[in-house]
Amino acid sequence: MEITSNKVEGTLTIFLEGRMDTVGAQELTDKITLEERKGFDLVLDFAKLQYISSAGLRALIVFKKDAEAEGKTLKITHVNPVVTEIFQATGFNRFLNIE
Figure 1 (cartoon, rainbow, N blue to C red):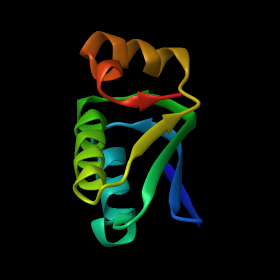
Figure 2: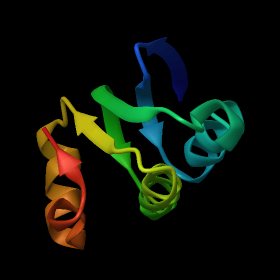
Figure 3: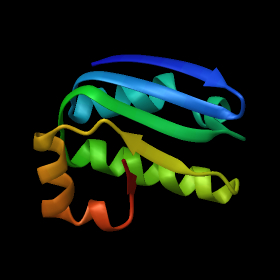
Figure 4: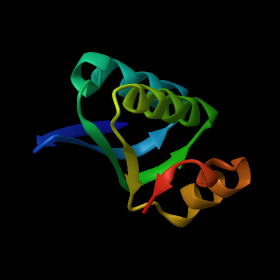
C-alpha cells in the first residue's frame, strides 16, 4: 500500500493507495505514528484505496480513538463502492464520519 500525508492548518490528510490488508494496516500505523497524528484533525482520503480488511478496520478504530482523546476528529473521504459496502456490512458507517 502507498501512503502519503500532508499537514495543513491543523489537519493531517493521509492519502492511501492500494489495499489496506494486514500488511497495509501495519504500514499505516508504522508510517503515521501517534506522535505524528497528535494534535491534528485527521482526514483519510480513500480515493485510491481498493479494499480494506478487518485489520484495516481495526486501524481506523485506533485512529478514531486517538483523535477523540485529543479532542480532534477523524473524517474519511472519497470512499469507493467496494469499501462503502464493507463499512455497511460491518456497521462502521454508523460511527465513522464518512463523506
